[in-house]
Image (tube, rainbow, N blue to C red; front, top):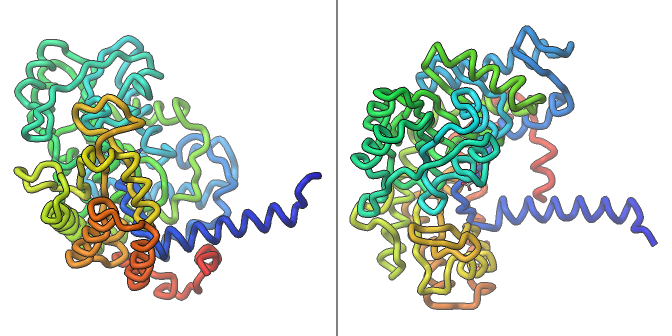
Length: 432
Ligand code: DSN
């Protein structure tokens, strides 16, 4: 017998409600690629634009009815271009990966060579043959790596660029502790006509808050990003450039190249988040980096193998743990989840298997937005210790995690609806 509509829908509502309560109020979320929007941005996310179409550029859209959405799109692009000191910003890509596909599509042709980092060294899937680079029928060469500095080996990379003359170099990463040498690589790349694309998905919010160098100012040709990692906006993508000669190519690569609809319901929240980052971004980003550093130190003091002690652990929102002696990344991530601490297993340099990597990647941006500072990082390190080293029953630790999290449920560094005479809203109702 088929399940009744009432029963299915009740289950859907219940799963949504439980998820909201669990992830919003009961867990310590440390996934480095996630975040929460401000209450105002979240309020505006639920709007009619989620069902609308608009192919083309503002003012020249192929559909009628886009008048107000076009103004929002132009506003987002203008605000973001200003914030990142870029001549051009395009918010139509629906994700960071789509932004990367568009950037590559704009400057390469099938068969061209692209230099990027392997996934085990932090490269994103879309930088590699297994992802966008392969989809576009490009070839890859690995950027040389200097494990002592946990960074691209500048001298070897310059040599490689001069010798192989790739069409593009992709900098930026998904495991990203220290800024890449954008200036040096851009200089060598430009000598041989190579484009430099910087994928700033992970660090966009830190760049906005001036806690991480701005690759656009350092000479990259194209900067891509997603708008929902350290930049705490709606899920989506963005492309920036300062090069007048690339604007038309990028525009065409985005549409009609690799997008049709743009998921325009993102725009009001994106505009609000960009204004919030302008107002509160410096405080937020500096606290994120201080928190990451303190969490790394505290974990180290408790006996964890935290990567890059000799380099001060991190200059971003991320901390990397080598947990191979504690059972490996997969096992540790599951144990932590049972204690309501959410992280992801991650490959470390030298790892071969993405399914059973030796690391755990931690990001502190979301907990920072909920108001946590250095002392809370010390508490979080103790929870890690109890689960992974002391091997306490995770369900016992979970009780303490829930209690601890109870004091950190209000999102900071952003606006609330009531500040603009709007009343609280439906989505948050589901938390109850
Ligand atoms: N997979 C994401 C991350 O976690 O870094 C990037 O798209």
